[in-house]
Image (cartoon, one colour):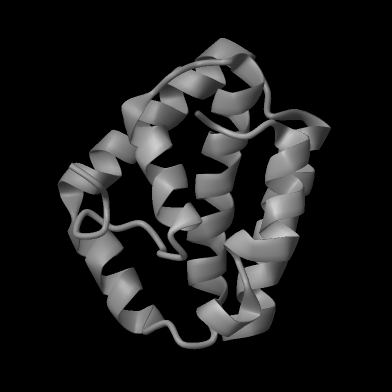
Length: 126
């Protein structure tokens, strides 16, 4: 189950995107994996289309969550492209939570972040 947007925003700051975890990431490898994986991109895009179609707009709450995720990753890694990917993931998670929509792909994104992993096809749970 996805956390509420309020809990999601708190968890970004407290434990999900901890600087100590982010600083040790191989950002280039993660970016290469995500950029090269057409199936991951297709699943991600399909989830985004479905959620944005259901919501009409992302709103202030999702924007605050996106900003918090971007700043956490950007500050810890100085890798703005990765920060953009992560903030986009958190927008999907927040939208799904707000709309109470169950999408397996979005749930898997969240499960990766809960484990302290930036999602790629290799890190997504089966």
